Image (tube, rainbow, N blue to C red; front, side, top):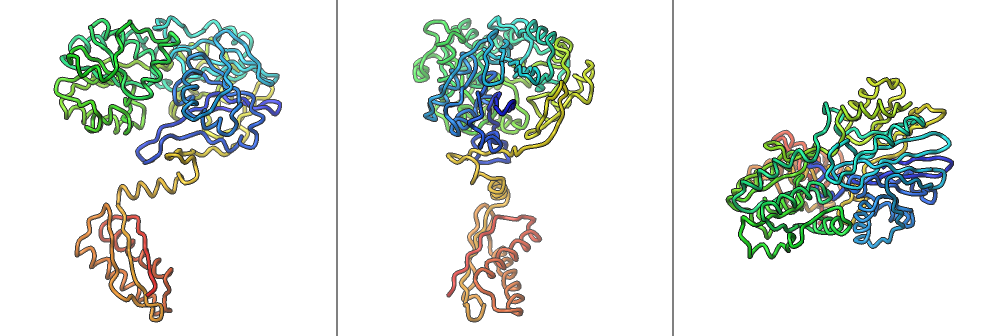
Length: 529
């Protein structure tokens, strides 16, 4: 999520989510931090969405909870995906559909939209004109010269803006470390065709629920090899119905069937397309791998992972691959077949764009720190002065004045966790640390009854352990550590209940760390006799 400010008005470009890592158990998604603009929501003139992937639109429902009438601007497919999400949140949005070649003004911002291709149709770059300068933000893009939808990235438009004078160029960095040019989507057709030609039984394809181009390839292959297709998973069914209705997904008549109809068909005539290519615990493919889904993977089934491995998700993905293989599936993925191409511009394409646009200032966007840095180095090599290439992170404030961009400060930009129905608040970093500690070391509850007159325990303490092996030796050792600490404390003064709870916790923590190299979450409860 990027916020542009001019003449007291705010323009938001994209509002997506991150997905949780293994160190964030229980978290659904991670939102941008709205705290800086929360008191200025009435100054927001629009939120512009470059394309329909979750990391660019997933936060929109939470933004519109703050102010429901913010105009939401985007292309036809992007707005259709957003509308479906907002309907689930019971929000009626104020939508403004645009397409490439159009110009629209929102407050002091004059916006021009340019076509870009990506792994989802209908992507847009946005040029933002103000009295302070011209900004060109690419969104996620690549320069596929043979796109499935014949919609080329508007390089002539980039060049025209370059002639006008781009003061700040904000470019997709995701593939900046990859040399050369990104393969075209068509290049993976032979590998997909090979899977369909050789698979003896069912084919289960896993992809992002918004990856329309890849799913189009799977549908085409299914039609060529006389297989019926069923979509599995709520988001997949919803998004593909939207894409087909709007004409972005082309499906031969009678090819799509309900998943229940597959039971009456030969395995060699079946293709299923589901979510879960990133190992998400609740997605269909993960549940199949864990034998928790109604669809049971069996010997001879072929599973095709038709998406990239997002950095940080590798362990989860390989866990799913291992589970599927255990049940007899042949798993085809990026690591053993050419079944994926990136949706992002590689280094050669980025350099091409820098030479085309000739920007005064560059601010790499989208990607991790190493990607931003690699993109910055490409810009410098094409002649952009090093001082005018800004590598920034969330919360950094950049001023564009008289054609010069400078870092001038920071605003709050913490991660905001969505935990079930809770947004922020309870789902804090401290809560996550407790969950991780519980998963690693377990929990111990200590119960004691105190004689408040003498400061002594009426009877031996009781222990309740979860996720930690509890035996007689452990109980004896923990009890001794408490008795020793209590005797030492009572020499100073007679302890009360809260003090004894602290003694329980500290003494057992120290003893367990020394004895077992473990620090479980310890809860101490003392009852007065």
